[in-house]
Picture 1 (cartoon, rainbow, N blue to C red):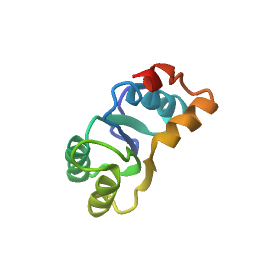
Picture 2 (cartoon, rainbow, N blue to C red):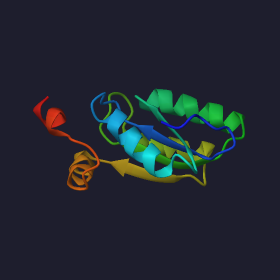
Picture 3 (cartoon, rainbow, N blue to C red):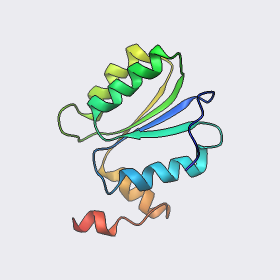
Length: 116
């Protein structure tokens, strides 16, 4: 993982699943961590709090990647609420099919996730 850099725009990964969030974060960080501050949260509530903090600090958010099915607020609801804080951020809503795509691309081994 790259060290956080307050001068870089942020990519925020939001997934409540402790099995898929770390490898997804690692994949995004390896690819984009030189140009972006890649970070993660485990819930929509935590993500909204982080987005508020980034907004108040004047930090730009380039991309928000959110799992759709999370306890409490869904990823879709999170992305809708994030629009008022970071209107220029790109948004990506993941579903279970995204895990399949990562697996096909060889980004991480999801066998233990599927067996859980």
